[in-house]
Length: 345
Image (cartoon, rainbow, N blue to C red; front, side, top):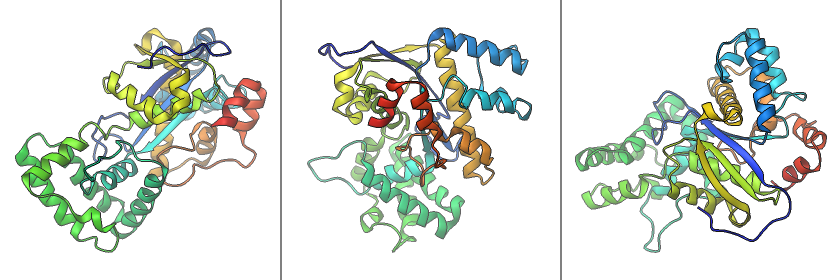
């Protein structure tokens, strides 16, 4: 956690966060193909009022706002209100979206081959993501999405191997699979270690670096820190966000976050209506994104969530954005504070 820092101008900025689609370090062949992390800056009273309105209009007995309820066709107008110009979230929320397969492609390119003795950063920068996009697109075109996912699954299972024998078998299988992609991947990527020591080093370096929640939280911290106000983050309980993981997210988000972040606390979503709104937003964006990957996108919903999706998301190409930019209009409508944050991110 960050140490005490000098006082900053302006009141404390408190944001609430939650995620959807988390399966830890299992990134392919799981229950979800996308991961979304949402953060909202909404007053508790406004969050309570929003939840009550949803319960009444959706005719739901639930005490929480769940994406599954609001995404039902009969509740389309309610969803449009929640995410639209007159709703409580536009200009007050941010979502980092992750295509898990693309994220795993970046991790594989980063972890193979073995680094030089001086070491390597845990999380790569934008250049590495651009390279991952190029490889992911080309490999998916050559093998088909399912074919490339099977290769990524081999790497995912290797890093998550439960025993040295399982890791050794996984490394041998992955090396064989990658050898058939000559000319498509960087030459160094084909050098999968198959000796026992090399395999164990790979597993040790990779374990704990695959979960997309760390780069997602880093993006959220960077976004909200741009306002230059003292920042406090309230997050739904998440076992992956250990003290060490939060410190890595802070380090990745940059010096501005280190200066303004006052702390991170964890709560049960049942106890904080703002976290419930973040949970709804993350769930809605994740489901819509999964439809996009499946080629079943609802153009209206894609455009509806566009102002919330971070441009630093781990996604193959930019999310659809209206040239008129509803997000920009929302920032102006919600005042200079929102405009300042949007301008600096």
